[in-house]
Length: 371
Ligand code: GLY
Image (cartoon, rainbow, N blue to C red):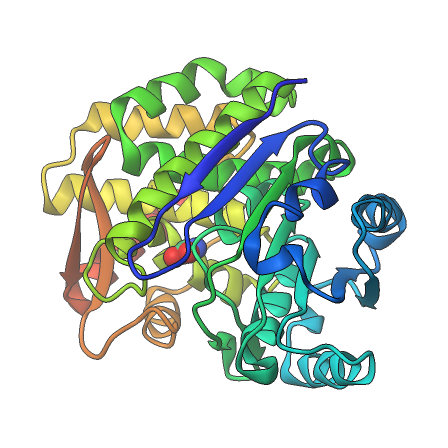
């Protein structure tokens, strides 16, 4: 099976590769022997969760051992509840107990929770060990495994404590996606759609044409979708590594309403992607009212999201409640709520939207759910 290698070059950081393909997990150990920061590591710590470990930990470990690495492992309970300082602290203690030193490395085997948690402990233990990301969900392959955001949640909100830590290597095995439940698949498809809308006509039309194949998990299309998203994200992060220059903010398209929906509907009621897709629909309509986004774009995006198994949600909340949730989000800044608004495919700006304007549009959104 062919594999794809994408080189991520971020100013001020070591260049790293993202290897994508059906069989790449088997080659993990061999690939790591070629990474200078990892090759001589006296020990690797594999971090995984209770869903992923029974399926893929043995394969990952076998590949690492066959390449000559000594490997320890830690498995955390699956789910967002593990992404907290108490679990991070248990991992720090385990890292010390197995004798990890600064020349060792961490390998994160799992979805976004494991990737964020492992990246966080790796970036803080002994002031920083290299981390390898082995994402096992579509969402983590197309978004969180690349770009270096790590974090844990507080009771006050998600990802409120974290670091920027670029991985030394990313190994995206599309074969492991076969075990992903439908809901998680659609969740990842939302981030693919987000990337396509923000990136270019070329990506958007390709995705529109191949939406059915992506839903059917056709290997060549899955690999190409992941590769396109990684290229897009690497380019964005290279321009604005720590989200201070107004470029990386584009990755928040759909997330302003999306995060509010996740929070108000109750975390887990809708997947992150389903909520982001709802946010994309809302932001496109807001764009039509505020920045002249063509109706054709709004409808084409609706059709794409429908085709990806991301229908408009049957849920809404009081406008004031949604506004308050948006203002409490970690992405929020003081003052008016900021939205990534698409002007068309591949064209966007970040706009501050006054409360009264936003309340009017949230009322229309709520009304559309009751029609
Ligand atoms: N997931 C958004 C970012 O990495 O900036």
